Amino acid sequence: MPKQEALAKPQKRMSRRVIVLAAFIVVVVGGSIAAFTYLSASSKTIYIDKAQIAAPAVDLGPSAPGILQAVYVAEGDIVAPNTVVAEVGTELIKTTQGGLVTVVNNNIGKTVSPGNTVVETIDPLALRVTGQIAEDKGLVDIKPGQRAVFEIDAFGSKQYEGIVDEVAPEAVSSDVVFTISDKRQEQNFEVKVRFDTVKYPELKNGMSAKIWVYKN
Image (cartoon, rainbow, N blue to C red; front, top):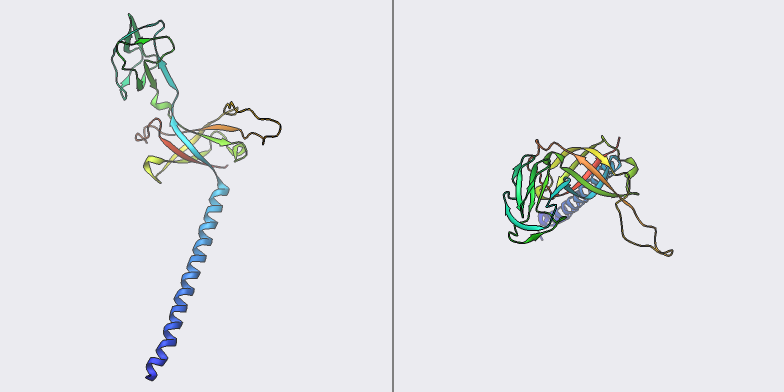
């Protein structure tokens, strides 16, 4: 074997070791930085995994049973207060506060009873990102006025700015019955985040989201 080839083989093995060692160091250092960044962010924020954009709904229906004669609006329409949206029997169904039409009953010719919704509206300016958080997952650190950011599933990792508007004074009701031997029930509380609906017109009622609330 020529002398030059004999010297080249150890050098190649050494080069491979250096490359492997360098790659290992990069992975370790990168992982450490990522872990530090995650822990640092976690210490400053409270994460709410499941949330949804929603606004209080106004259900419009008849005061007496009658046949649905006509509907004058469609989902997505913007209506003013005191607008006739449907006719049941001889009764005209009118909006109270106006807003965005989100639900319409188009079963013309069917009987509609009191308590049944013919048209549902929301006030777009009242849209909030509403999530639920367990009482032992940072609830005590969430207060109205705190900064929050949220992501919408439909828009990937794009972040939106908001402010905590309300923390529910009582837990979300549950019909689960626990016996003496059962584990203590974990109570969930609603947290609502207000955002600029004019700045973010793409955010719609019913969209899924996740929230990070910044601690004070």
